[in-house]
Structure formats: C-alpha cells, structure tokens
Image 1 (cartoon, one colour):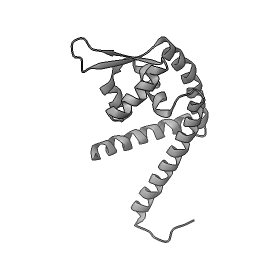
Image 2 (cartoon, rainbow, N blue to C red):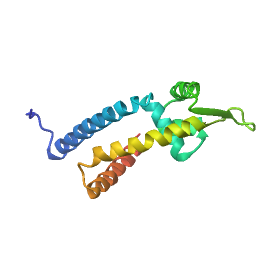
Image 3 (tube, rainbow, N blue to C red):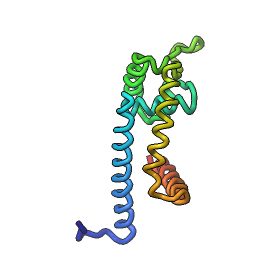
Image 4 (cartoon, rainbow, N blue to C red):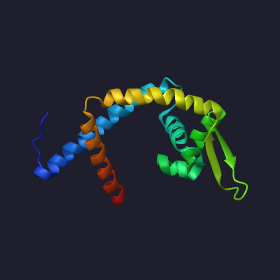
Length: 152
C-alpha cells in the first residue's frame, strides 16, 4: 500500500531503505533462529559458541562487547552453556574479577558440526545475490554500521 504522506525524495528513500533493511534482517534472523533451535541452542547461545569458535577464549567483558549484551544477560547465557558442558569459565589468578570463557571439547565439537551447516544455510539464503552483489551489500552495510556507531 502506497502512502500519501511524503517527506521529500531523500527522506522517502532513506525511510524505504530502513524498512527494507528491518524486514530483511527480521526474516534472516527468524530463519537462522529456526535452524539454530534444531541444535538445542538459543540465538544468543549460538552467538557465544560462534564467537569462541572463531576467536578463541576471551574474557566475559570482551565477549559481552562483541555480542552487544549486558553483563547480566551474558551471565545467564554462560550459566546455561556451562551447565550443558559447552563452555568453561576460568577465573584469573592475577585478578579474580577477570573471567575467561572458552569452549570445552564438547563445545568445540558442537561448533564444528553446526557452524558448517549454518554457513551452508546462510550461503543458500544469500545466493539470490551474486557474489559481487553480496560484496557490495556487505561493504555498504559496514559503512552504514560504522556511521551509526558514531551517532551513539
């Protein structure tokens, strides 16, 4: 349905872009979440496993910054993953306030199994765009993300 309210060509284009980004992101996230649930993980849990699988052990603070979540949320996510034997937390001997998180053997096996399948699924979903279009979109979204980060 077309709207009769217009805000100017530039604003209308920006608003249209924002709506399309939000819709695509929402659909992408829903499809991804459905796949991730098959592995018995929530989206935040999968994000932790993915980050630790790619980057290796890191402090809970660094992990929280990477995932853009608060310390309280991170604690709940890590409690559940630790309970399931996927991650382990190690308190620093030098500074007991610092806790490093890493994947256990079970967590590493889980990461290797599910991430390969996840990467295949994401590749399938993105295949409506050519490789060149994917690169261009990636570059543009990075540019937009960096600009939005500065506005915060």
